[in-house]
Image (tube, rainbow, N blue to C red; front, side, top):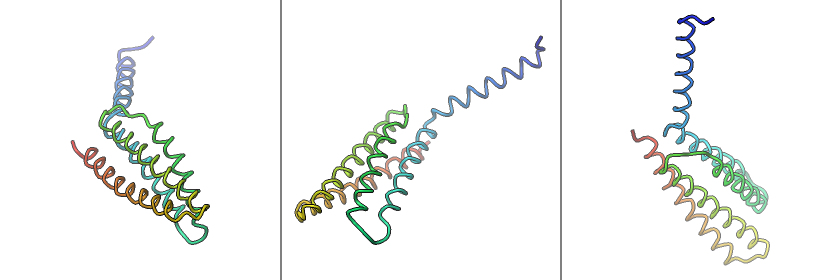
Length: 144
């Protein structure tokens, strides 16, 4: 038989667990999920691009990293509508960058300088979009 002291302890535990569950879906928690995925993708891409060697091989590796991170980004659960918008923009941005990277690799294989230049221009544009998007997410996530 449970005493009132045990009932109070069970109630306290249930309230605490309930608070944790609600806290998991908070704006801060959702922001942290998106920031974590973004940081991990950036770290992987930076590591792949370092050093000398086969530039085409590096681009192929970066394309794979982008592909993987598109899927990772799509799998992040966010309920906040503004964060969903940021998430969709990141997926679109990574998709655009992945496609430009593939085109660059293909163009390099064909030695098509014009296509390579167009792909590089697209990738540079994506870089600017990424900076803007990161700034917007940081502003939104830091707002109270």
